[in-house]
Image (cartoon, rainbow, N blue to C red; front, side, top):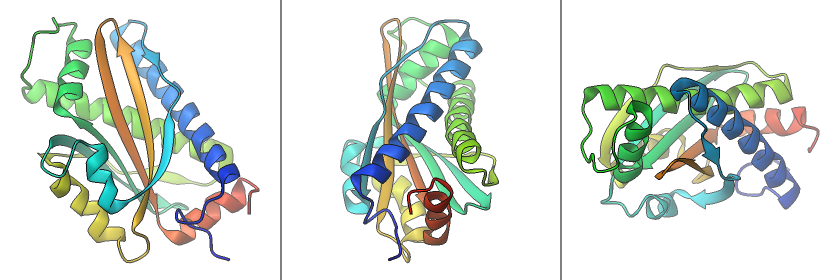
Length: 204
């Protein structure tokens, strides 16, 4: 049987959850080093979602979100997207620039820094996956969009809708002082890549 995100069993989800935990932990450490402050992180919540339900996780199709999009190549082909709503993006920029919580705007420097954090988080997840599986995984430079959730999600939906209408979501909450950042990492490997990952992990 071909295994994809639609028919993962609980054991496989636990493995992917642990990968998300390791990747998010590495990202929290990198973020902490970046700002020279302690950053707390919740245990990631891993879920398998249909594309039609993903927008609801981000506050609804018309909710304004920031999406940072990466392509995967070599042994694993697919996409990773890190998405967060505007409030979390503002909180993240406040953490990065050590600003007061009442700041409620984002400028180009904020967006550049947020993109770099997305890069750190996506790279941490890809590196954790590569280390545990021995598979080569290259990640592209980030591409950022600020748009309604429905529009942001149309990119991976169009590109991979022909092989799967589901996505693996890793929800992670970072916290520094009073700033709370809820980020969602969407991992979308193509079907052959998913088989490679599960085979390398010994669960297939």
